[in-house]
Length: 272
Image 1 (spheres, rainbow, N blue to C red):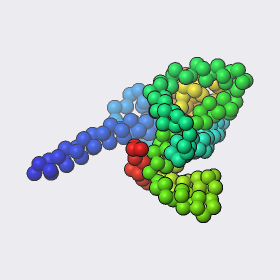
Image 2 (cartoon, rainbow, N blue to C red; image 1 turned 30 degrees about the vertical axis):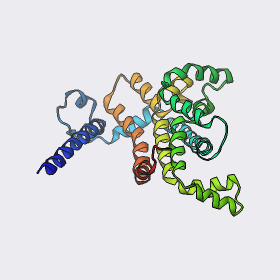
Image 3 (cartoon, helix red, strand yellow; image 1 turned 135 degrees about the vertical axis):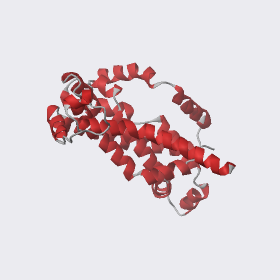
Image 4 (cartoon, one colour; image 1 turned 90 degrees about the horizontal axis):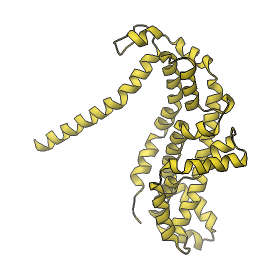
């Protein structure tokens, strides 16, 4: 009975958490299908009429096509940078022997405690000095590497037996060949996990694109939604329609790679 009660309590807590997560998305979706008057007067969760044309109006009211393109280019560039640069750094910390390796890794861990806002001003000064304001380089280059990704991949690489590397080296495989032929294929769940986290971070980022973009031609989806709200005086049905369109790619990426994400997190230990 005690085990059954504990299971029931656990499921009740999970149900409450699921409702707390789903209800805002449900409100966002139903509001996007209401008229402007209904958004201020309706007391029902479901709209009394379904106005799918709100999505077409929201898409035409702001250059969402350009916003999507900018967000996609930025997200793909950041994900590619994380997968390549983070993997190389993680492999060095996991397999190579060099002076002060462990001390440098501790410093890297400590960098996780540094708030992102502390580095915003120096990063912006560098971008402005390079003349990268309102460019893809300004959106992508300062975030091509990520401390979280290095630590995640390093812990995964450390869990792969060293004997596989030794066997590959005996067979004549170079250090680079060992990395690309042994480590990378065996670490696909970790790479998928990092790719999902990096994509969600880049796609939903607001502060950095707001700082380094000034024109509509370079704004991302999240910045476009903010300007859309100010421009049309909080027309909630159009704003929620735009928000739904901005949320769909992130949800789609998560759903497609959900199994690899769970597998990667489960198999990535936090041990030496």
